Structures are given as C-alpha cells and as structure tokens.
Length: 169
Ligand code: ACO
Image (cartoon, rainbow, N blue to C red):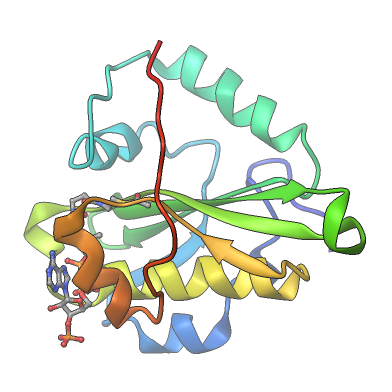
C-alpha cells in the first residue's frame, strides 16, 4: 500500500507483534507530518544535539525523506493520551551493486524519553526497524553505538562486528 500523504511510509510495514507487545496507551507508527508539534525533536535531544529548526524546516525535511521512495523509514512511539512522541528511531535502506544488487538496513537515531526508559520501548523500536529491513530483503541490518549501549543491542539480538571509523567536518 502507498504511504498516505501524512505518514513517512505505509503503516502496514509495522510489525503487528511489536504493536501487540507495547504497554497500554502507547502506539507505534510511522513518523507523521504533525510530529514536530508532538515533540519529535525533544525526544531526539535525549540522544544528541538537536536544535529547534522550526516547524517549517522540520516539515521540509520530512517531505524530502518521503520523496525518496523505499529509503527512509522513521518511526515513533506515541503516548496516545498525552498526544506526545515518547520514542523514535529510523532505518535507512541502502542500495548496493554487490551481493546481487543487495540492500543493507542502517538503524539510526534511536531515542527513548528518559521517563519511559527501561520499559522495553527501545527494544520494540529496534524490533520494528529490523522487521522493516528484513521484509524489504536486506541481507543485513547494522548500526553504530557507544560501548555503553552494546549490552542493549546484544539484548536486541545484535552482535559486535568490525569497527566504526568517523571523520567529522
Ligand atoms: N546497558 C545494559 N543493558 C541495557 C542498557 C544499557 N545501557 N539499556 C537497556 N538495557 C537492557 C535493559 O535492561 C533490557 O534488558 P532485559 O530485557 O534483561 O530487561 C533490554 O536492554 C531492553 O531495554 P529497553 O527497556 O528496551 O531499553 P530502553 O527503552 O531504555 O532504550 C536506549 C534503550 C534506546 C539506549 C535508551 O536508554 C536511550 O534512549 N538512551 C539514550 C539515547 C541513546 O543512547 N540511543 C542509542 C544510540 S545508538 C543508535 O541510535 C543507533
């Protein structure tokens, strides 16, 4: 099914098992065009420097991601009563020439509201993103993390492999 105008991607791609496993009152769904107002950037601030770029610029970025078909899958967990984003994450699907024109899923920008940490929301986000990546046929799903987050990702079924190199501008 094609994504609706206000969703980053089709809601059908979210694992029903993950949906069922969430605590009452919390809902997992694709990032929506109105999530700036629901505190999406506040949640990303749990992870790293996230200046308030304003609603207009946020929505331009949302539309730019939507305009790349089958590439960006940002999703959120929302507290439905409060109408606030409480957790977020994204998988980016990279196309390759190797492995028979294979694809790789890159998990990025995982963040859970401090008040909601320890309730398996991080785990559910990772499960939902991996489900999207694997259903799209990716031959692997990878991510970078700090040493302190290795135990969390091991609990999510990932294993340490190789090293990360970085060059910041
Ligand atoms: N060290 C050891 N174990 C951990 C850690 C940790 N840092 N974090 C979680 N766990 C364990 C939990 O105890 C739980 O174990 P259990 O199944 O035995 O009970 C399991 O991992 C699942 O934990 P969750 O409850 O799902 O974790 P949470 O919802 O708190 O999310 C996260 C974890 C995403 C790391 C959260 O703490 C957070 O937002 N941290 C700040 C931002 C951050 O570091 N994000 C990840 C960046 S890496 C990236 O984006 C690719």
